[in-house]
Image (cartoon, rainbow, N blue to C red; front, side):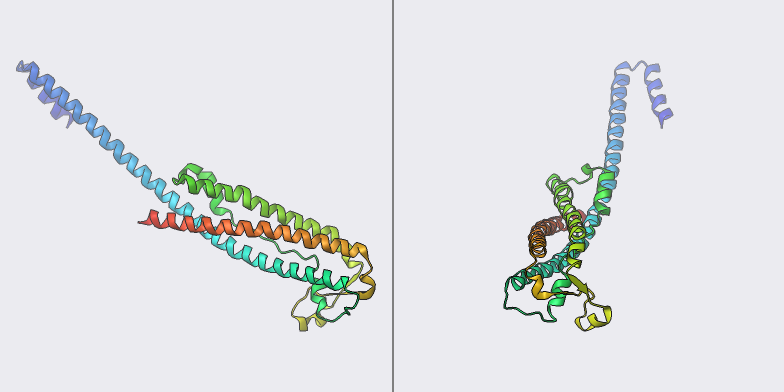
Length: 250
């Protein structure tokens, strides 16, 4: 093709058709420029198509992670809500001199400082960071995702650490006043976390026990608030990601 154009130029010069030669040369340059622009456009289209594919895969991974995290966090909140309820009931029971011990309290005492954990799925977010945040074209969604993982998830993670520390700090104290029921006895309660007071009526007079119980109860309420706030944010962003996936697939 190049030889063909070169032959035409040589013929025009040989025949002395200078004006036609320059017109032809300009036309050839324009054709070359157009060809380059088309090639660049095709290359840009291919790159955009690759980026769109990567973005879709990351959004799908984020979506799957969030669905799993939402379900897991719901489970943790449910378990923590029961623990909070038990703590509240125990505080009321131990403050009431007229209440006598009964077997149903074993579960409340057994759950006195237990903690449930939340282990987030972060594969999608780690992929996003490795590919570069700019792969997400929706700037608002990108900002929401980063804020979720860097703020809400960080708060819940810190709550997990504090929960564990609270358990470690109080477990030996509570065990001074509580006896763990053997697994055979606990089967009828369908719960292996059962404890009974060594002296129920005497326990009502132990300020140290009550102080730690009320402290755990209050901290659990705070942890619960962090978890619920994160859950609501996760639900909102998961729905936004779903919409972005649907748009990308159209």
